[in-house]
Length: 101
Image (cartoon, rainbow, N blue to C red; front, top):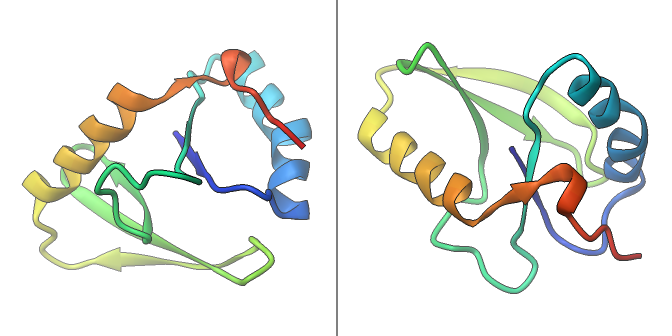
């Protein structure tokens, strides 16, 4: 799942042109949710969920490059799963996403 705001950073455009197609070719279901005009109640913090019980926050520089990944101790899984459900419900497959300039 990729949440985006326009304008995209150079790093995001790079990832979308090179990394995402490679991941899709390897079998990953990549979806995109444009939060430019509506946040859908989602947090600003990017995160990954592993094994439905482990949460890692991703921290970024202003240009979109990754600073680090931070393991969250005792995450509120109901909250994270709720955000995940909202994002999935409102996203589109990468191939259907309009990557406007």
